Length: 257
Image (tube, rainbow, N blue to C red; front, side, top):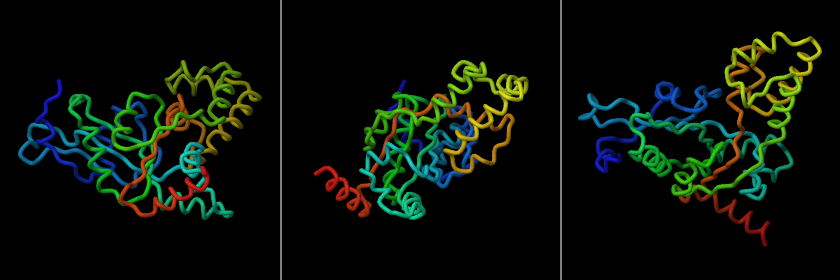
């Protein structure tokens, strides 16, 4: 039951990766495979530090993906206007923050903590754009109320290709969620099947920054499982206080005239 006075006992402050790790086990993807660039949290006010845990809720930002089809649709290709791909990527990294995690301690759900944290943090950010991906709709209303625009999307081809490739060797990724079981089955494959699936995994990992660091084994399998099912919702927030967004809106207007 929601306590209308609960938020008065808390405050939003800057956090760190340790704060994320405390609550990471409650996220449906428990491992964050890339370093956060910004972390904020809801903490109890000093007078309540003995009765409430710290953190109560945490939000994590990281570098954006180099390219997203839904981003290109939402901005009418604004981040693909340069002939030099390096310049396009530079613009993406300078203009966009990606939001991969927003987690609340399950003991304090339905108190408005996530919405409170999101709205408070958005008011402090200076970057032009925040974007996020979600696999389901259950959190989308919160983002929309905060000013995000929602686009439903089809997963990139690499997801269906990977899933179908595993099916060909007798592994149903949607049904088997224990990485040890998958690793054991991969070890028992014939050499030809192993060569085939290793090639498909390499193609899949090529879509992620720094994913080439993974070698065959538990960590790589854990990463693959964290991406299935793939996100089907893209949400983008244009910072109303950042003047750079005028350039994007003018670009969109020109493309849609």
